[in-house]
View (tube, one colour):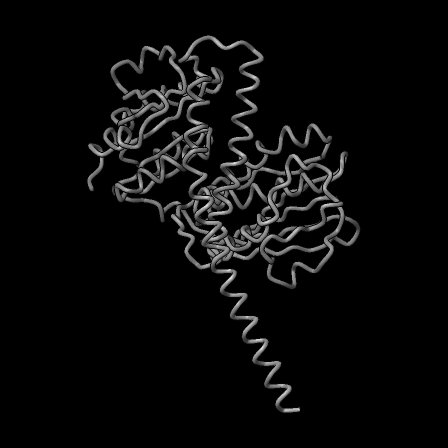
Length: 380
């Protein structure tokens, strides 16, 4: 009997060692594969953006529509590569974080904007109120948005037409808690009582919208991102029908991002902004990303950054909104001398008050070119 138990224990130990060996090499393979795919995909998307500007000649409506689809699916593939790479790093505890004070209201607004078209198409009732503009969490911009985007799109995918999604945010002195509820089918297992396993499929039979379903590894990555931020992600079945994901993150304040070398970066494109933010981090400066033009002036007054960077989109209405913010900036005695860099998505006529008062760069801008313009304004 004793010998049998020893043999079983030895077999178990050997199986666990083999499992760890296979997991290690799986993560190495996935990380390398994702890394090798990211560079050509990013280059492809850059070329698509250049084509969209008309730099190589006129494009008709059908061609522009095709480019939009290529851009969309290419971005999905690039996001998947990033997700695979991040999960492999997270599995071995090597997923780096760059922490900022992030506006909860801005994260909420960004989430509503992402879901707008999807919920309209499926006639889903979306409940998501604005929150206190002074409410902030500490986190890595791209990774928090990656986590929240997964949870939101997951809710859309599993919610039937004419269903309901509710996003509720509550705050205490030390924590901010998101509650994302949908009216889809309940989970097949008590996820709240276990760690989310890698590559877990919730229930493919209950997916109502495969267009917005993320990869199966997304839920596990979302939990690991929450854990790395000192937070907690749980899932519960609702009493009647549906699922609630509960996300809890540490609360912080704007004071924690004040620094002698601060760059305020406004953009309507979070992925592009995060990419340039990573480049600017090499200057040992702090970058505050803003995705709501109406917040730029108030944040500039509060934080007194060394330089402002504005991404001017192709959309004329959005561009005019940004120009109005810049006009307020230039009319303010305290802010008029603030260095401003404009990143133009396409060639356009700038308002007269901006002539000879701002630095203009046309996209795409190389990392070296952006650093060259920013560094003279920094103390480091």
